[in-house]
Image (cartoon, rainbow, N blue to C red; front, side, top):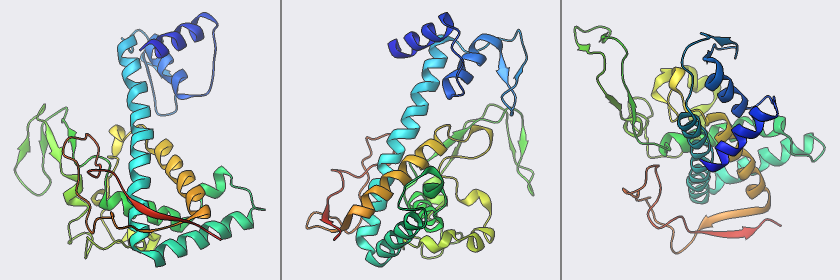
Length: 259
């Protein structure tokens, strides 16, 4: 709260304008709400309170940092158990960087297709949050039925179960990044893979978290090779006390420098 309050006070006192997330929150706080293009609409309406603004900042960093670290951990666990996939990914990363003159840039990180596939398959098996909750703003009739979900009902969506359903992902326990080639993705309903939610309530830290995950994996895989250690479990056991999906006791792997 103190950091947010000091940042808000400084920007408002000095009329600081920046093209960033905090600037959008300040516009909403002071002037109402924004449309999809970031234009202020609804002037005169109640904006965010200071506490609500601070809460959005907290969620942004929680979603962006915690999820990216656990996703990297689960990804390295699967790569350690699947050395062929790890070697292929390392080759793809090195090739993309070499083609860019040996420099790691944002464009390079965001355009390695196999890296996308590996991260998405990790998120399929290990979604950061096992379930999502949504509340309909009005009565909703489930298509093809007469069942009505009344407005205000809390609906729980079992993301973990959906993404391990063999009807959507055959042999769901197998780690297979090729499930996420553009051709394979087109064969599935888009809402059977929603590790960060979907629609207007999609996770606010999605792009930030994925970008961090990519940069972290690129740097680690270029320098190190990962393999199972004596303490690496055959199957991950999740910690029921954690808000996000996390392994009990952490993740132990054997790490060797790539020569």
